[in-house]
Length: 179
Length: 360
Ligand code: HEM
Ligand code: HEM
Image: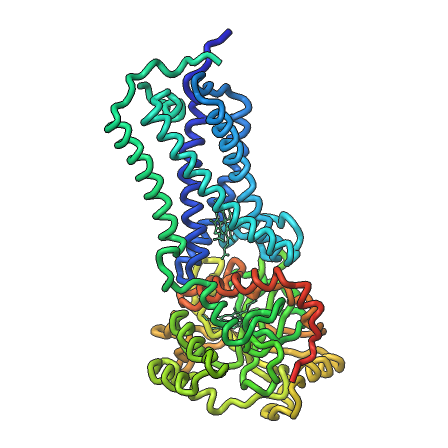
């Protein structure tokens, strides 16, 4: 039998760090624009839409990479609840990075607004115009973005816990650094 | 599962463990704190979309399903017929196609859906042009030529000056004069409002876009403009409002029954030095005006079920070929309309059950 890999595949690591930056940026951009009436609101939203759709495209590639490469195993001595929490939070992160951009796209469609990614690039409507549906999708986009933010914080704390306290190679499996 | 990746590590001393835990806590707290700073948690004074919409609700009451401003209105439909005049200035399809379908909405500029039509001398007209290529142009226009103020902050102060005093239920009569004394930029608006009377018809008014925009040509050249639609039904102009509180919608329905109504779309080209970022200032002197074409309205619908009900006339929904200026009111309008739209979109069914007749 092949030895288990110690690291995530290089493409998986690249996608992980690129998307980490993009998603954290998107959370701050979204929270900032929703709380502003200044010109910031306008330019942040012009950034928010194309960046969010780029995340949607990347997460599809990322899931394909996830299913077609081997993941390094978690340490054998990791308590069972931590193993479960790790698995559950990873799938929650994947689900949210897929669902949030879809909600953003769908809610603009449900408002009957053209889904413009720039002055001239337009996406087709994902659903037909429906104001009550817009209200549900817009609220879900807001709440789930906050769920994503808290999951990211937890994920960050756990990664640092592995790296600084347990020192068990889990953080290195994603940074790709030898210890 | 066999553990391949973690060779045994020397245990951490208590001090080292404490420092490392504190590091983790510090990093997490820093990220959470930055997020709370950005979303306004630490800054209750920041003017947010909801602050503006809450102020509108304070002044007008909450009327579920209705727009939080310009609440009383009527839907219309028709088309825009372009002339050739704007084509050299803007690549937007609306100016290049012969015809573009439109949905519009006439309204009174108040958040009270039961306001009598004669209560204000201002009427508004919002239009959504739906281009064949899927892009849209939405604009909300008012019958006054300038806005009272130039910034969202000043507009918020204006709303606060009109807020009911909790003790009396009415605005303190000293507040408005105090506001205008502190806001000399409102002088052009006040001069206009002195001469303005509530009109007897939506069909005889000129509606002004007020904010500046850029037309962008196929060659990328940008020309700043303000736009207006000028009524071609000039009969009975200056008729003052009849008695009763709901004559505007009836008048419109009657006029449409005997034929379409027309407005000419004028694009006023900015001269060098005209203010592009201050909607409280008129553009003074000779200006070149393009006649971009004609809006033709053919039918109307009550707003409770009409096609305009679920449209957010966000002034920043623009087709390629028209771009926003840096007028700070534009971003504020876009943000506040989104907040108003979210509230009313969640309340469509109560609106449907609300009778549309005005209450005394
Ligand atoms: C990973 C992807 C995304 C994240 C993390 C994200 C995050 C956020 C956040 C945090 C907010 C503020 C929510 C609130 O306070 O209510 C927001 C609002 C918004 N997002 Fe996203 N978003 C994403 C993708 C998208 C996409 C793809 C679109 C559209 C194509 C989009 C369109 C919007 C819009 C229109 C708003 C509301 C603006 C307003 O109400 O003025 N988002 N987003
Ligand atoms: C910062 C300043 C302003 C604020 C906060 C504000 C706020 C609002 C709000 C909340 C609505 C209801 C939106 C909806 O639920 O769909 C509205 C409607 C409207 N506003 Fe403003 N507004 C501002 C400035 C202006 C200006 C400068 C104009 C003029 C050109 C204007 C013209 C209109 C029109 C025509 C409508 C009615 C649209 C319709 O019929 O649906 N507003 N405004």
